[in-house]
Amino acid sequence: MVTKTHKSGAAKAKTATTAAFGSPLSGAIKDSAQQIWLAGLGAFSKAQAEGGKAFDTLVKEGLSIQRKTQAVAEERLTEATQRMSSMANEIGSKAAGQWDKLENIFEERVAKALNKLGVPSARDIEALIERIDALSAAVERQGGKVAAPRKVAAAKKPAAKTAARKTPARKKAA
Image (cartoon, rainbow, N blue to C red; front, side):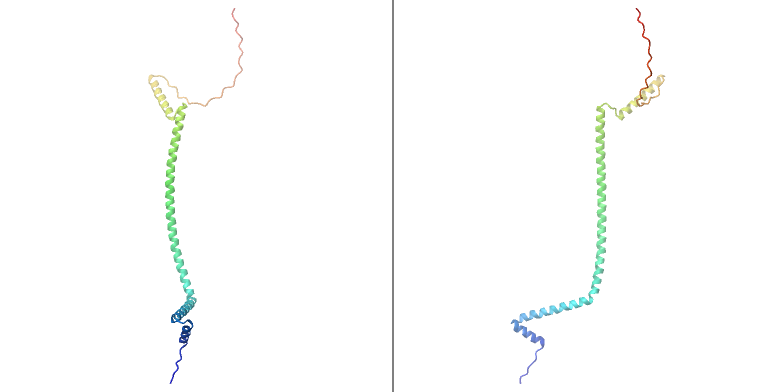
């Protein structure tokens, strides 16, 4: 007696693919591709079901990372600001030193030019005042009167001319 066995649907499909492609390897590849497709569909379905929760979790993690990044960026900005301030102060002090040197050079050159023109310097005037004071003291010791020091007044305007008197001409003695 011959009994026929009924093959399941998967076995029939397997046999059909083997017959269509002609090798058991191609059937295995097809079965594997089918399983990957079904796994993808399952992942998609699960993502739809749990997508809201995953999205909320990702948003929370993103906020946490953003806060950390902002804190680090602010720290770096503060460090950079401090470095720039110290560099600016250093440059400012160097510039002030150079300005002082330039000012001294200018003053020396002006003093030399004035000296060449015969204009007395502040030191020369101070020396003359000291010398006048010493001479005044010596005159007082000698018993003489010392005139009060005169202040140098601004140049006065010439007085208005008065009418000139006419004097009679002298007669010549003959």
